[in-house]
Length: 377
Image 1 (cartoon, rainbow, N blue to C red):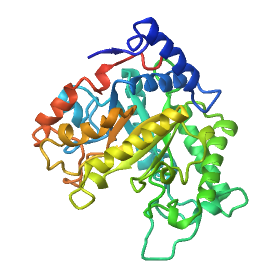
Image 2 (spheres, rainbow, N blue to C red; image 1 turned 90 degrees about the vertical axis):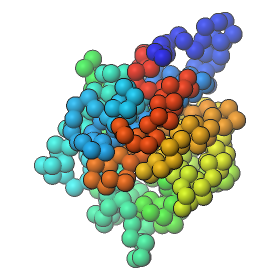
Image 3 (cartoon, helix red, strand yellow; image 1 turned 180 degrees about the horizontal axis):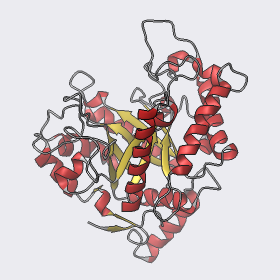
Image 4 (cartoon, rainbow, N blue to C red; image 1 turned 30 degrees about the vertical axis):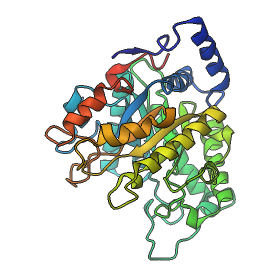
């Protein structure tokens, strides 16, 4: 189903009024955003009224049994189309530069350009190494953990090191240009799952006030000092919240966020909550908040590792995404690892969920890359 995003959602006068209202109430936080970035934001807002983009992290970099193939993804192998949204990681630009990471950065840029040229959308998370102590994004919870966030703020011991990291991200963002010569819009999702205790920016290791200050500095430094104007900023919690108030504990404010997102694996896992209804209720919370605030909403990470449920996509995930009329711009499945054979979240040929995923793919609600047309116009 090929979607012309410029006109297909408003075919009558009443709908045109809705269209004009959407343009009035929904806008990116960067007043200097490129035209393509503004168009992507508005088109995603329109899409979430009736459809949802399906995404997959690192989809075109590698898959369950392959790595480095051109124009390939496990999802395309299954249904004939790449996912509509492909996720990458700015860690490739900031973490321990070497010859091998330089090549991976070049490959990531290449895949970013290819996705844009095909009409798809890209998002970047950031598993940032700790600028204060040089360790990875993940913390060793068996040891005392210092407050890194405080040290990254102006006046902190690692503030200058953090600015170097942001400059590396800005440099990569400015290299991301399509074959049309235009900067590629990127949904940037820093400091995700911030209420958890597994990343150095987690809530147990700093205050909400410090987190908000770091988020605001990050946006302002990238946007106002480094001149990055092709970002849409996504705030993405884990699934620990039960109310809108809990969801907003670390929220830096409407002037600093474009997308309200949630990562949720726990509510789908047999060793977790194992209750998709809980996931659905949280989806509705972020959807309702986004409508009130004039933001996009998204399920920014999810999936069931190894997909042992052959009907998971249509019987578990799809009802969550559509729960009580929730409006989500996109959902992103986590990656299919080449080395860890049980670590995959999207099907590949021969996997037991393929028939069900094909039903998910054909559902009128879900959009894949082949369904998009004019998303940057």
